[in-house]
Amino acid sequence: MRQILLFICILFTPLTLQAQKDSTNVVRNFPQKAFTREAPVTNITIYPVPVRDNSFSIKADRDMTAVKVTNMIGQDIFRVRYTNPVSATKVMLKKPARGMYLVTIGFADGTRIVRKVMIESPE
Image 1 (cartoon, rainbow, N blue to C red):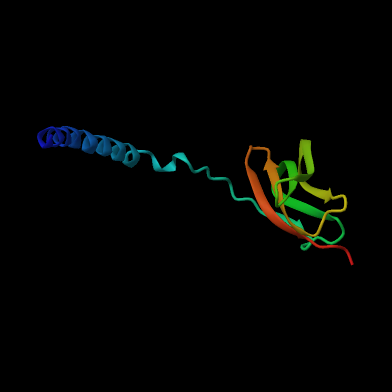
Image 2 (cartoon, rainbow, N blue to C red; image 1 turned 180 degrees about the vertical axis):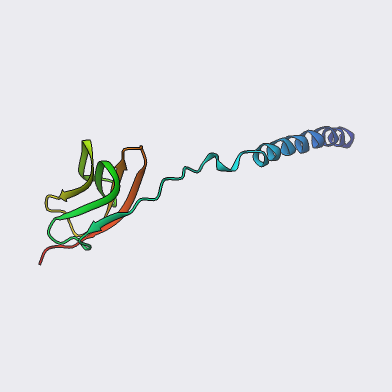
């Protein structure tokens, strides 16, 4: 019985070591820049911050094609798509709750930028 177990261990040890060696070579030879996508530098201005009157303005130095405002649990509260790209826009919200929101801005070249905005209740 011991001889059979020893034989099995001797037989399978080189196979498992070879399998580990193959997987490490694949990971090591993978190109480094495959997962990164560098977006051009964009200056975006969102004002006023914090938002108090249920509206805010966005200005960018590139043409925007879409604007989306999402609450922190992922619900869209505002969405607009522009057929003619614009560099400035005003976002009008319908009675948003107080809290943090994500503003996703889509550009003509297909890139997107996400910014956080704090909305306070008007006083």
